[in-house]
Image (cartoon, rainbow, N blue to C red):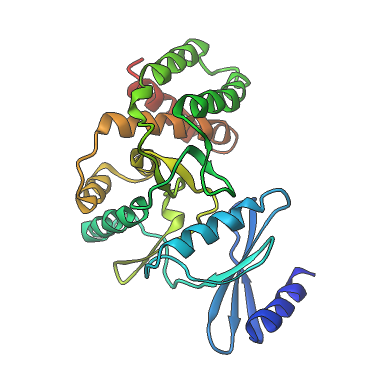
Length: 278
């Protein structure tokens, strides 16, 4: 049914005839299709019901960043969008340092966009929360009950983390909020001929300190790769801040790891203890 709708949309909105469609969905929040016409390839994205804000966020970033490594929007509907297809694959661990240097260089272009507020980008163009305290209150309210449901999770560690998070709230700066990708994993980075060709999937865009983005990336790649990213970024960043924000990412990620990847979950517990000086 959806394929027929897509064919109709492409004909009506772009005057293009679809010749092939391939499912490229990576996750549960949205349907992603590679759509081929006689002239070129496109990406079609349609979030699940209740997740339509992802269309706004994707369009916001792609429209504000006129960069080769960012998809171009061809059409935006209420609950779907059509964007350019960037030809590349996710990087493997043995890629050269030059690639990760380039990633840091281009990530800085995203972070140049100044925002206001903190947390998930809303349709008013601002972060969901006015200040860091409200953001942290919301984060703990969402994540702690999920962690408490894990019987093996150390409840003393949870109390320690709450204290540690609020004691270091100064790692936020109320006057400094920037556009954050917020899901910087190899799945959302594209490489071709050992060169960066794309940073994709902006449905989870947030507003906040740039170190928050680095916190997620720090959890996803090796220390050697991460060092190259920082060198490409060409701005001295505090590793204490990066590890602090890595903790905030882990709070969201760990219940999922507990269900699908116990090894990654156990590793995450160790990182929580290490980063928070438990």
